[in-house]
Image 1 (cartoon, helix red, strand yellow):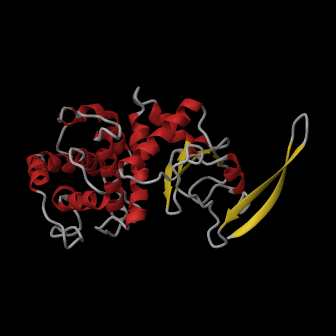
Image 2 (tube, helix red, strand yellow; image 1 turned 60 degrees about the vertical axis):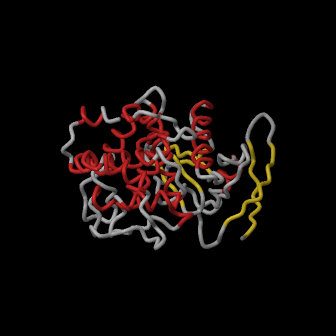
Image 3 (tube, rainbow, N blue to C red; image 1 turned 30 degrees about the vertical axis):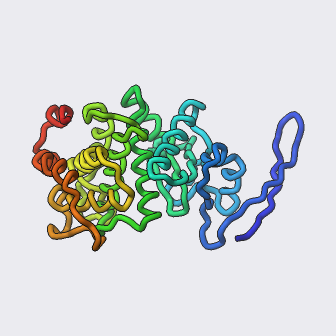
Length: 305
């Protein structure tokens, strides 16, 4: 790790010199963030935001060159909502939360219609996607789902998941959708007991699906993404560890979501079918297949229990 000292002149009625100590990895130009329970360290600090520009004049390759990394959203209420959601995601799995940063682009606002999870323990969330998602429901459940999806990727990084690999990103993205559905149901999460209460969330999951099935960046078709949220929501009735969730999700993955290999099983040799979970999922298998194939009408989907 290399320590870089930089003096910044703050312009105002009185000029002040601020000295900041920044740590950066020479092989990785992105800001390195460390998970912490501290309230003040959950969101990127102003000094961390400034440090991110020492090694590069833009956020990173995931964002526009005119994008700016910030430590907060437009209102304190919005920032606090996201902080609390991230803390609840981490607490659900008994882990420390990653760092959270926000990306704003004054020149191309629409370029921030994105959220990105990093292997270095941080999530960057775009202003544009936050504002659009917030407009979709009074309870802001769509942003809760998106953040839970991105936190699902943090779980995948930590536990070397998903256990089922495909030639595209689909298996990773659908499992992250499943983690989001699980979180939305859990009392310690977003605490939605009825599936109809998360309508705005699963509709958004469908909106960001794609049909580029041969493309490496394929994230799952709209029906498959809705199915993954539904499967995660059903699994939310049970208390599972991260690896247990992965095993249960992928035990039903091929038959429900059309995995590459219909005989695929969870990688854990110790995996055993849980009779209670199996009874629950098998009772819903017909509907899950109907959702995944696109045969289920939206009106029927909204009324699932």
